[in-house]
Length: 145
Image 1 (cartoon, one colour):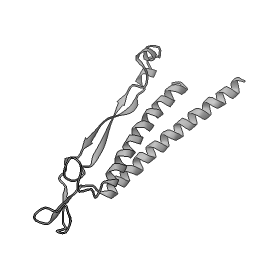
Image 2: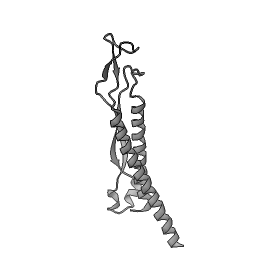
Image 3: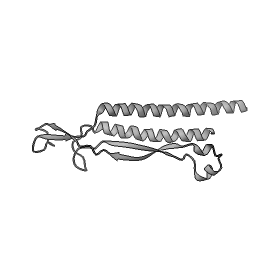
Image 4: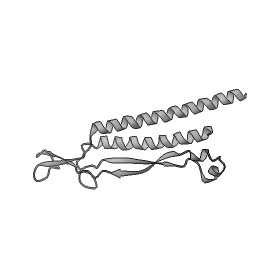
């Protein structure tokens, strides 16, 4: 594995984790949103990731068989949660139904914060990897001088 491949793998993870953190932030920001453009309360979103190639087809042919096993990560999709909304009795709320219940998104703030911490740790780990690769590259250049 060369320096650029290590950077490509980490960069793919940084991009995926950034998307993951953005979606979690959106969930937290809309935890009390009772009315959306689509109608009804906000629906929680989840990020699904999958492995992906880190090389172009040409560069893949130029590498050894061992290097071809390396994979990065990408966002496969963003799914809208289908859990039913939480009904809270608030008869004075403008979005209350005829029985006085307001439909709120089924978002657990503690769960979202734990997911945010996990995504942040993954992001930080990949930043550290990139910093280490840069340091190794710089030291290799110094040795070559």
